[in-house]
Image (cartoon, each protein chain N blue to C red):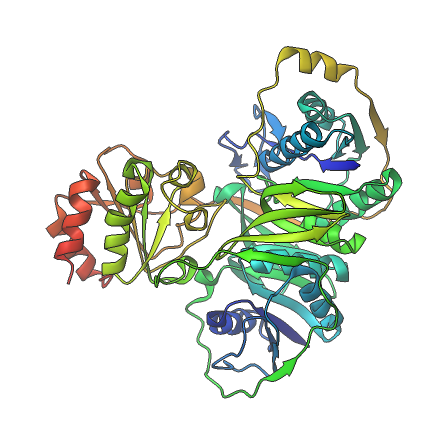
Length: 295
Length: 245
């Protein structure tokens, strides 16, 4: 019995190995993100050649190769939900999204209601498809291993055409994988102030920038920076929330962070209920001061 | 052109829904039910397409207990032309919901399905993709803008890395993200008119109940004892102590 990890970003290999270990079975890898640097114990690594990973052709490929596996899984992301749910539909397999803990090979925990509750679910099926959040699996030790990937081609062409893609802005790390994330809310007023204050601290920490839904909706920050249940789920070592009240929706996206720091001038803001350290202060003074005093 | 918009009845997303003390489910007493907000966005987007292009019939469909009629009526008030209720007491998983939707798509000769990317109760984010797979139609998930032309849709999608614009041939499935549309306010005449719009009840076309069993539901408050610091210097000391910087 084996399982298959699908990789959409080259940094996901280790997480997938950790998840496979939680299931207690050997795993193969199919990568849609080009070559993988380390096998982390994978038995076989296949790298899909080509540019765009489009949902229909990618899911066709996964479904065609599903026969050998008991589980097919990937790190939770928009890309993995797009492709794996389609593959589950093709295979008529049940799927569990956003798994945060493996209780047994057939029982898992996952958040529901925008993270307000955790459901324990069990499933008994010949093939189970899952996406998981890495934060719950980070303590699992996996070994490094050399791997010689084989190149594979998708056998069906997509019916879709990509017309344009937004280029990732700047040199900052990817939000959902950064070690430090600094997020700002609507009090930041405008895009330039947001970039100066939030971006400034993020750069000092070599971290990523995040934003609340309110900040994104009011045009202060770009869509892809939105952190929360309807945006990105983050789990950095350090999360700094500046001028963020702490809605359930936002907190659902940050609560796996190791350390949460809240800077807010309202001492009653709910963000302090989930923070490890709180500073009641005006962010326009406190954040630049923190930026300048950090080593 | 026929557009299908699936409507899910969910607990009010702004209400505080808590697990029952024995963990056997959610305490839904005194909780209102609403259309899943992402489905409402999908419906608004469909109505906007109809207003722009004309010659579009919008059919809304819900799967569940007879109470789903309330949410279907609201979708009719928003601008759907008629509603279909697949009435069942069964608990279904997303794949089984997709089977039922597929049957409706085929019997109605649907050209385009616009639906929420996920429901705010179980947050699965699966049904649209599974329906697309079962129909062998292409899918444009996480849409923030739809431009319909004769034989295709141009869709701006939100991705992990930012916006992506794709051209998708019809028929296809489009799943709605937050920014696709802002649901309109429904005025009284719309509500009255909706009462006389056709709403047809049907039975399930497939059998079986959910393959995923919910064993327990517990609340997930993050435990934290927030240590308040007096100034930035103290904050830096604390962060160094825990090795965060």
